[in-house]
Length: 314
Image (cartoon, rainbow, N blue to C red; front, side):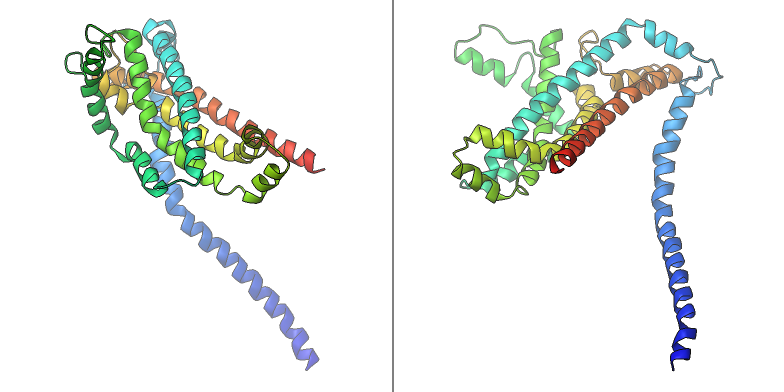
């Protein structure tokens, strides 16, 4: 009997190894559609865009390799400098405001209050409304003749004439930033609210018994535990804001006089509207280092946080 068991052990080991290999093969086969999807719709368009940025391609003409001429052109172009400035300004200011307002709303909704479920649903409305539809609504709100904001301020006696929201360079910049904040706050608020609900209530109870103030509990408990979630949420927020296109295209189309031109809209207007595909591809490729920089800052922040937690545990 024992000899039979001993002879069957190698067969069992071989069978387990074979099953393990089969599982790896099956897992790889299941990953093939996702890999093909990423290659077809992400890697290939990105690679094609980079290649086109080194050519003089036009609409209807494939173009030839011209080296770095397109990049030399955009570096000398004042419109590109203005687009880079406003893209960074737009991203930094809008992301900072969205984080502050979103965090405040998340903390507020995490407290016990009546009609909390209804308020959560209302907060999500700006996020689920299509971008073009909300842009048209803001275009009506900012209308130089029929603006409801100007009408209200005139009725209150605060202003005499209508405010030129989209005709003045700086007014238009802050107007599109406000529209972006209105659309982006729900994503940050709901995401941070989900993170707040994972914080153990016992930590707040212990801090309350120790006489900690609400601000001390936020600094010592809430913020440190939310740091990983904040890093991920703000990374997505920065990426979405930096690559924003629809809102600007519908509201201002980059005007007035290029004051609200983003790198994304400049790339589209140059390549599609202007027919200069190579130059437009160079503008879009120039966005990649900024996006990678935002991702790396978030990654290093998370790694630093893990290192601090590891050192504190020791």
